Image 1 (cartoon, rainbow, N blue to C red):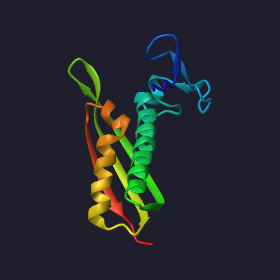
Image 2: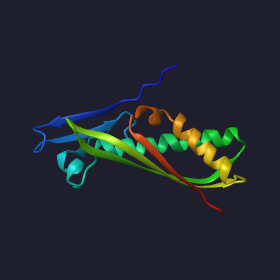
Image 3: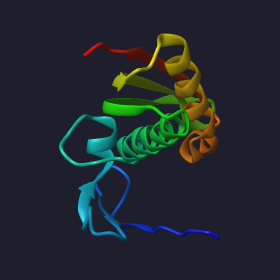
Image 4: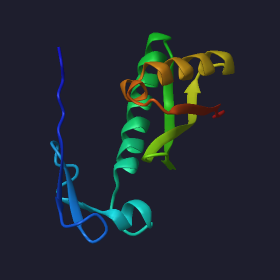
Length: 144
């Protein structure tokens, strides 16, 4: 069963002086502004890389939750941050790396099991499979 989700971008004008808007099928984003300045100059607005970062963090966290459930473990809290790196490369720009930072409090988990499950989730997450970039993972099991 294929699941199709939709995101939409609308753009007006040139690259540097133009403006765009991003929308998601769910309505979580509705004509949210993005542009050259928000992508390359740190100005307000969104950009594709932060959206990919949020998607990757969410996907990885859900994959880890699945792995934990299969191992009969339950998370009290999982916090994942994804840092997506956009670098200038020959011929333009490319996403060259993603750094996942995971902090979790999981009842009954030992460090070895936690690490193995986190790495399985990193490899199995559908968004991880999307990237050709090097994806690193910094995972720490926190005590209660």
